[in-house]
Length: 249
Length: 98
Image (cartoon, rainbow over all chains, first blue to last red):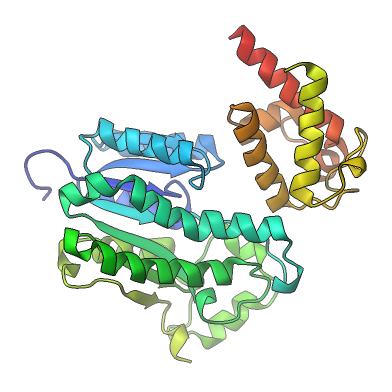
């Protein structure tokens, strides 16, 4: 049962598709009002917002590139409209060119790192006040590419490694304010992104995964919910594998 | 900013994004077919246009400009430096009349 009183507030960057949308649904069901950042698909974003509003939640949509200061300011303003509180900040935003690393061009490297890694740092800085007010929690979605070779992953592997380093740094720096910061290192998940990988990646992942299947977006969402929730109150600065056991093989 | 200045700014942004000499970004040059732009480059370019001209660009805007349901091949053929410049000019004019 949601607690009485004002709803808790969650901000999700990349919150209207895949893992982000699954997380939004989970947090809405648990009684959170939401600020959802998204990049491209306005129709899908509005459909999700409408679905969650029908469940009684307040939902603010913010379109644009989270690496852009003006977009982050609008995310902050949306949180201000919900009482200037932020109990949970979830970072699911990422872009990449699906190609060999050696063929990544300078602008592609820069954009991938800006959106997929640096924007976490900048977004936490933007929302620091409402996060501190709530002794909030931050979680970022990383991937196996941070520490293993993933074919045709472009610069996203290096970006995820940077993201995890940012998580550790922020956890130490913000711990004294009661803000926890963690990452979920996701294995291969069913969804649109699969179509960008070379043929054979899916089957190879299946063969290596002890649980014998790919993940579902909601299984990553469940981990993000847990790690930003009260049950994880002593977990800080960690990168947690949620991959059906893939990393062990 | 005059229409000529807008189109010149678009040319420069295309060249800067793709790491090309600005002379290569001729009005008739097709971004994806001739200048080597990939999907992520178009996203990068879109962000640069948004920052430079102060308006947002959504998939819906682009679909209206290049035609809803247009094939990938037709989109690649239609996306020239000039067409992109015309899109920006149109958006700026629409903002003035809004």
